[in-house]
Amino acid sequence: MKLKDIMNPLFVLLEDAHSAEQFLDENDTQFTRRAYIRSIFAYIEGTVWILKQTCLKAKPISGNKRISLAEHALLSEETYELKSNGEPKTQTKFLRLPDNLKFTFGLINKLFKTSIDLGVGKKEWDNFLKALEIRHRITHPKESQAFEISDKEIQICKEVCSWFNELVHACFERISQISKKVAENA
Image: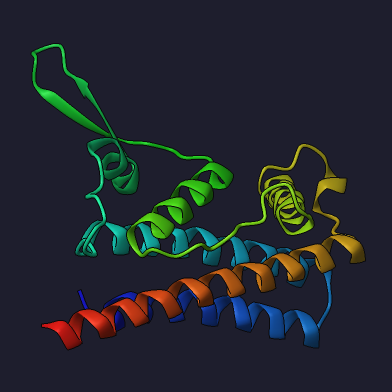
C-alpha cells in the first residue's frame, strides 16, 4: 500500500469539508450550517474508515504484535453468524463513532508506535460529543426546531473539525515517518 493510495481519498473528503466551510463563511445560513456539519462528519467517518484500512494493510513494525482476529473484524466492520443451513454469514457491523474513534486511534498507536491522544474527558472530546449530537439532531429531526443551529453550536463544530484535522495530521505524519524507515531498510 502506498501513501498516495491512502491520501487521495482523504483529500477528497477534506476538500469537501473545506469547501463546505468556505461556503458557510461566504453565506452563513441555516442551510450552509447544516451542510457544513454533515460534511465534516462525512470527513470524520470517511477518514476513520481510511485509517482502519491502513491498519489492515500495514506491515507490522519490528517488535509489534499482529492484529488479533477481533481487531481484524472490527477494522473490517464485520460480524459473523451462521445461517440456518450451517454456512457462515458475514454482516456489516455498525460501530458507534466515539467508540470507533477510540478503537481506531488505539490501534494506530499500537501498530505505528505513537501516542496520539484523543483527549477523552477533556474539552476537545466533549465538544466532539456535542457536535455529534448536533449532527444526529439535524440528520434525524424530531421537530422543526431541530434544524436550527446556533452560533455557539457552529463554533463547536468548527473547533471539532480543527481538532480532528490535528489528529489526522499527527497520524499521517507518523505513518509517513514509518514508511520512510521501512523503505530505507528494504
